[in-house]
Amino acid sequence: MFCEKAIELIRELHRVSDGQLPAFNEDGLRQVLQEMEALYEQNQADVSEAKAAGRGDLIPSIKLRHCCLLRNQRCVVAYLYDRLLRIRALRWEYGSVLPANVRFHMSAEEVQWFGQYKKSLASFMRSIGGQEGLDVTQDMKPPKSLYIQVRCLKDHGEFEIDDGTVILLKKNSQVRTDSMLVMREARQLL
Image (cartoon, rainbow, N blue to C red):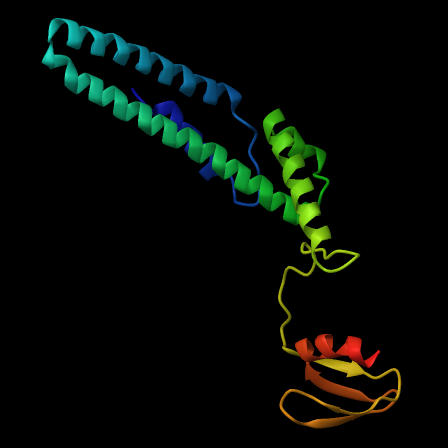
């Protein structure tokens, strides 16, 4: 039956949990592409015959095969796109070097795409955050509290925070305050 191999590719992805990458099914993909090629050739022959002989009875079968072609195309694109999303998530999970067992499940093109994505992400991280850059792959979980405990290393005297409260910053004193404010103002204090 039409489109069964393409649907099997999609089912294969659903069988594996989200954090894992199944082995690249090159044979299944090749079979789907061969089926698409055969459907296309059959359609071309029927269209030529329908035009030449004026056979309108071939139109429904042409439309059916065309719909099967479109469905196969959608399934193949969904299969490849889902794999790329999983590979991108693996970059954020494992870092720039993937374990050998994960790389083993990737095709050569996916390994190449991963390398390009890794370079692009590294370039982006170098472009933000000043001279050192900013590693956006660290601290992926947000803090549980917006407030942090701050210990003053030097005497700075009085310091006014956003809400107008004045706090006294003496050496070794501790203050519980808004973390964003401290990060913004810490450079001015040092």
